[in-house]
Image (tube, rainbow, N blue to C red):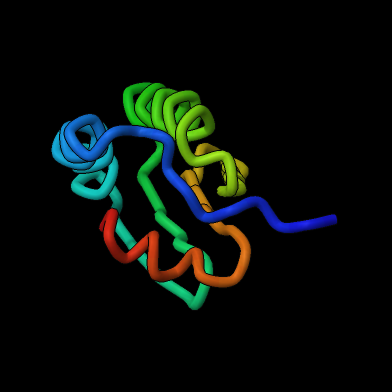
Amino acid sequence: MDEPPILCTLTEERRSERREGLLASLFQTASERSLGEDRLELVFPDSSEILSLLFEVLRSERQCCRFLTFELVAEPELGPLRLTISGPPGTGDFLRTLS
């Protein structure tokens, strides 16, 4: 199976709005951030508000950045929430522009 192209379908204006709004909220809320070669892991304290934010980010980003894979893990005993965003080779360069 061919890898999807690393391409965001938003206009530059919409991408900038999203980066300054929804994505900025996401990165500011993360208690830990780890950027690998083609993946980004964000860790958040458990809360209903953060879970709602994470679902909104996934809903939005799946539409415009279809090459990304999102994994959301809720640790047991109301532990931290972990969001891993990954993709094909070259995704790391794209993810660095977001964070």
